[in-house]
Amino acid sequence: MSQYPLLFRVRQTFDSQTVNDIPSTVETELSRLELGRRIKQGESVAITCGSRGVANIAIIIKAAVEHFKRLGAKPFIVPAMGSHGGGTAEGQRELIEGYGVTEAAMGCPIRASMETVVVCQASEGFPVHFDKHAFGANHVLVVGRVKPHTGFAGDIESGLMKMMLIGLGKFEGAKIYHRAIMNYSFGQIIRSVAREVLSKCRIVAGIGVVENAYDQTALIRAVAPHEFEEREKELLVLAKAWIPRLPFKTADILLIDEMGKNISGTGMDTNVIGRKYNDHAAVEGEWPKVKRLIVRGLTEATHGNATGIGMAEFCRTRLVEEMDKKITRINCLTGGHPVAAMIPLDYPTDREILDVAFPTIGLTEPPDAKLMWIHNTLEVSEVECSAAYYNEARERPDLTILKEPRPMPFDAAGNLPDHV
Image 1 (tube, rainbow, N blue to C red):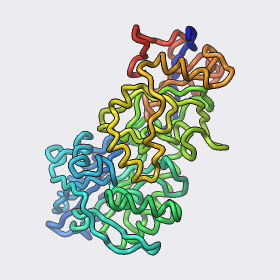
Image 2 (spheres, rainbow, N blue to C red):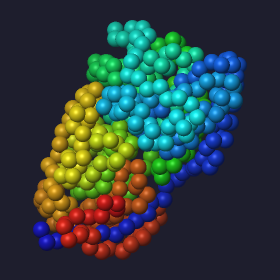
Image 3 (cartoon, rainbow, N blue to C red):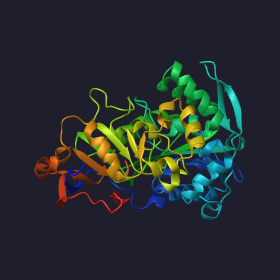
Image 4 (cartoon, one colour):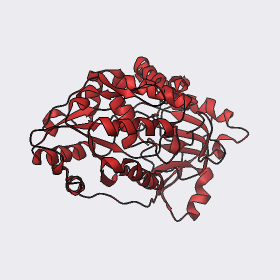
């Protein structure tokens, strides 16, 4: 195919706020809860660390460790991430160490295990699992980012309560809870299990983190156990308002440089690409509406986990070669979403992919196609857009045109740069 759309670059302006001094904010928030009244000298505190690429997670956890040390407690860190890391303790430790959460940097032990304690039976009739090391601690601090879930909608989605289920439930808990969600609902199961965990597992507090559209820490809130549900509802409202968005509501083709578990639970945030309820199309009332999704590679931090690859119609062959099929399938099957592990049509070069993708968008000729190109679904403040959007972009006060329309930058092999 000889013709491709011209591309211009835009910068989006998002409303946002940022936490400037993270350590002091964590200290101030935890101090507000006066945990010294509950935590005695020498008692142990398990602090959770998840697998998502939460901005500044090492700084946040380090500040929490320091707070508990000042109280005379003995903190340690527990990887809390369901089936990620291949469902192994070593894999989960490796994941958090990749985020800078190491024993040396944090100044406390990391205790990674896939063993759980069955705390009780939930009222729906399934066992409630809880990490062995966390259950053995005198206290547990739940640290998690609050954000819209990639597959469920409600007033509670991804956050502290989910961390108590899937994260601290480890592989066994994640498997049974995702099965239970098929029979009941996400909202019912998350509340049912959280109620049991809060009453039986010595949760001392939570730290809820909300990020802005620029992938920066926007808000840190310490939460007392009895406030988890109400505070999380409030934080989710903010998270939904601050979520990054694509600059335009429709696209014939969306090009994404990289996907991975450090970007989103589904590799690509479905709230950004418009595929939260249906893997290959936006439902009525959902935006954006993207006809064809092309993914070009995996992040290094995802360690081969390509969960979510099945939402794309096309991908570069190198992505399939980088993919650890076993780890990906474990994660997708545990989450009850086998389609997310299915492999799209793959081609060696970007040019070959576009040549087969453009004829599938309808009667629109390639030069006139609506194409957006992003690095990943966390980084959308600057986007390459095809000329079909140019007139609208010029009229939009929230968009700044950084580069005028120019040809797509293919190299001699027919590939685009790895970073848009």
